[in-house]
Image (cartoon, rainbow, N blue to C red; front, side, top):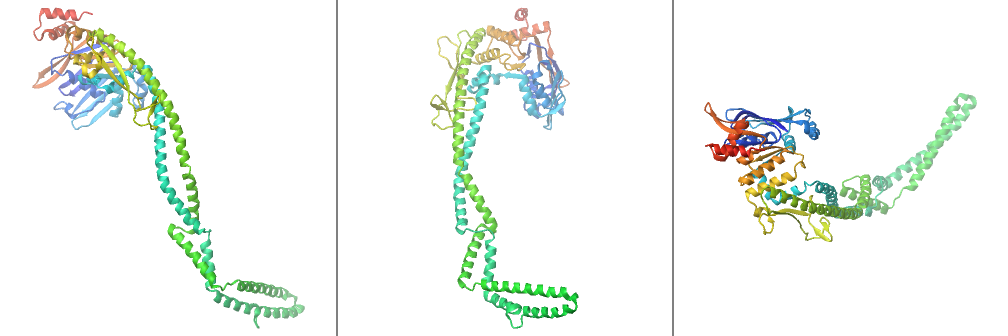
Length: 567
């Protein structure tokens, strides 16, 4: 419950603190006195957009602070604590707006984002003005009214969970199909690259081994001459090293028979001779392996050119080309699996479409049941508010789809358009005259009727939305006399479920208030200021009388006011 509202340097208000109690508080005053300024200030502290023109002339900033009894707001505690604000028995909201355009918000003296304050304000206060209740004429708001029914809300929640899965599956399917389109292009490129590599059939290190062999083949004659020279020096020549070592070994035989200490040197000579003989044999084998065939050199050059061209195309080393070949094979294997993936996603989307369609059908059936109940309740409430022959209908239409694509739901076998709220288009129809067919609301209602319809809906849904405070800003436009009293009684009844603040110009409504605030415009020290006064019984009676007869209050108007104020 709102317990007080402090407004400082806001528009024409210098400083006022308004105390509020439970039930219905009415606010009256002459046109231009500043009644709507109070509502604007309340809207500001609830998170509505700020404007530097709100700051009273000559002041540096405007401040609005609301205090609420938090005893019945425990359900909002997690939200408040998520703002890092301390939970307290009294909830304090504050908004400051400077002439420099700086706007600050606080919850229990903790700075918060304006959006967070607005979200909290939406849970605390429901403000209805002449513009707000006109929104009831727009068909797009009718579904919101119908979906506030608990049974409908439950079915809507179940539907939206499935619809979220369904749309996510469709998105994934679209992504996969786009991927397949890209894959078809990529597959052509990958297959071409793999063909180029496979036509050459390279082997790891092949280019280096060919270059080595080609050097040998191209210098075969020189290699043969040099190798034969080495062989002559070591083994085949008349004066070869092996023969010389053999003669040295015989001389060591003579020496070691005399001096055995030379035996190790003799063995070294023998080992060296054996090693040189082995080298000579290897050189001879090398000479035998030298290929002097010109065709072999040409073959090697051609093969090397193929490998060099392959490396040039891919701008890679040969080992990197071989790695690329394996990557391409792996990639092509993966690309081939996209069709299987798309088929899997299509099956999943079809399954989810069937489930979501069933959920949409159940939602629609529940809505129709709620619409029947709502119609009866609204007619009964409108009768209480003076519209005796009302016919109120909620019509649900389904938009057919011209295509049978998977993204549309199925109503039976018919594809229908849908969104996150199902496939129903909801619109209220009304007849207020006996014998007349019900027509769309915006075509048949007057200002007074739409006010009563809105009040009827609020009375029916009282306590359902969990919003504790309601503000009615002159929604009684277009009603008067007996009907005005019935509207006032309906507001008073509604105040049993909500704390109500009503700005009115009708004495019939002002007379049923539990508390009465008078808004006046005064001039002091050459400045105009708006002030509020809480009226007690006698002052209330005179204000109601003024609403009845104008500034000239008579005994008759006082007596009428007294009658209106009787419980």
